Length: 158
Image 1: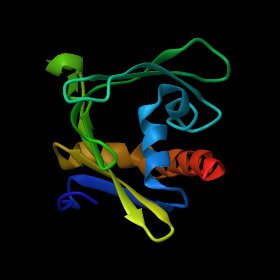
Image 2: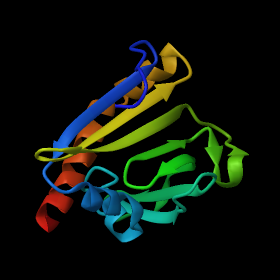
Image 3: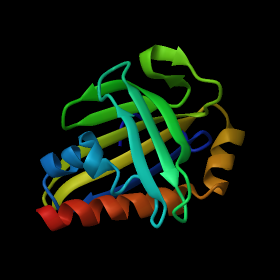
């Protein structure tokens, strides 16, 4: 995990994925792969923009039950260290533009592990109320589900 989580403001989750770090990174950096795991099934994800560079746009839509695609996430990448770390926020949109709404900055880390890759997500909130809201919305279930979907995708490829 990156930094020192503040239990009053942050939520963290990690998992050992039994696949090489390069495969896990590719699942994050390739839009077609990303769509297969980013949102808990059976909801379908469509990547509108995945400009994986500082200031780049991060935009996804979702479709539930075969319905029309709707907004899911609009954000901005703050830092990208190839194969190691991705930092994004929904407080900004692509090109560093202030977002209408937003409440979180996420640090995604990728580390070698004897069994594959240690994958971590550290989500930082501006206040305790936002942290509680995110947890109450199902952070652990949702992020746990997408990490399981990510693991299933890359472990099949390993």
